[in-house]
Image (cartoon, rainbow, N blue to C red):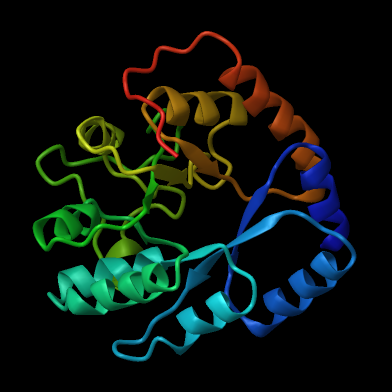
Amino acid sequence: MIETLWLCEACGINTAIFRCDENTIRILEKYWKRGGKVQWLAQTYPKGEDLTNVQTALDHGAIGAFVMGGIADKIVTDKQIDFLRKPIELIQKQGLLAGTAAHSMMVPKACIDNGIKPDFYMKTFHSHNYWSATPIDPANPELPVDGEGHNMAHDNIWCMSDKVVADFFKENPTPWIAYKVLAAGAIKPEEGFRHAFASGADFACVGMFDFQVVENANIAYSILNGPMDRERKWYA
């Protein structure tokens, strides 16, 4: 894992997104002690009023943190918006980057409606141009929040309407990290990366094995340095 981080660093990747747990911290501390430069943006798991996991990330070198998408989805669905507000404010009070991930567009919309101002959003984003995409009801472009309901959708669809997401961010200047951009490997990087950046994403969170790093970095570099039909400004 440390060797993979060295490889990412050599390819110009300066930030990695990892979950916050003891094993992640153990590996990152060894990597940084050896001179590693890749930054850690932490996925955290607040439990209601308990923000221990969030604070753990901030105490162990994370440059920022965000609420896991599944947790944020449920917080908004359950109308417990303060459970989203409090971790974001905790992170910001310590001078670090604060955000929330989401599968559902209800999350960023709820932030706006309730005066929550994260430094960034993470939002799932991909097209449906692959054979196993779940048929979509245009009148209800949302994923079911509960686990059983989500299993009704195929296991490689995480964005029920890329148009709805792209339209939202056209009007919102908050930096956007797109994730699940390859739909669990159903979409080729050349297509998924271009679609995300052309549609307005400022960053892409991409899970990779070590043998994929160099090729994917080269694909992203080529797309970002070539012609692109993008309307949204870049925000960072």
